[in-house]
Length: 339
Figure (cartoon, rainbow, N blue to C red):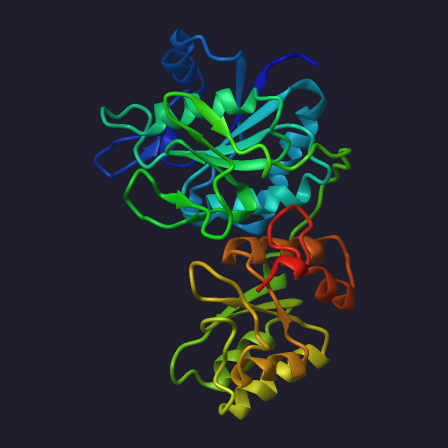
């Protein structure tokens, strides 16, 4: 295996250029990337691009299969990987890859930018340089997001700002590292290298849906979601520590019926930080009684990706309900650490 980094360009703002119609993909971006970065004396790297670049907002769970397939194909040939991705759904892809790359033993750094690489005030150079250096670091053996000098666990990251350069954070886990004058890693937080068990999976976009609660929500909204063809998992975005309108019996009946029909219903909070502890209040404990599974302190993105992953692995509803609150790749706190 060569001590080289593979940069996989999947799309996003970082590889775009301006046009009268707005941002559009830049021509021959891999060659342009080399011209911009080669003078810095960075670790040796190669660049490849997906055949069809993905606009971040158009990302589909099936695209995770395409990205993972490239990583699995080149896994024996490179010592680390950098994935260029649009920011809108970056945390979803980083979370999904953390599950797909079971037993990860190399750095996989996901990055992008708020401004294209060819712009004057771009944040792309800083993100790319840091990502390449971190992808060559022997102490990293997991999927991370690197953005604005922050190294975040991929499945703990979330986009918290729409236009600022410090767009990503990790609300419920300290940063894994920080790139200032020097690069500092929080070694006690890094995952240990595993034994790679890499396999390609197929993701069905129809398998998982999301229901966000709001004041006055009608049960028919949930009923139509639960009746969708191919649905196997439903993520409930509840209030606070996992509370729902327990007085809305019609809604509770719909959720209970879905659970009884084999749909895995997972409860996650609308709050940015904290977690779901649905037995704290009566308005949450009703969910435990009807078989809804708490998501612990996972981000919304990690919850979505993990549920998709377990379904794609062919796990039974009972197995999925047991595994969702447990940390598989550091995506949530272990039960003995939870409040």
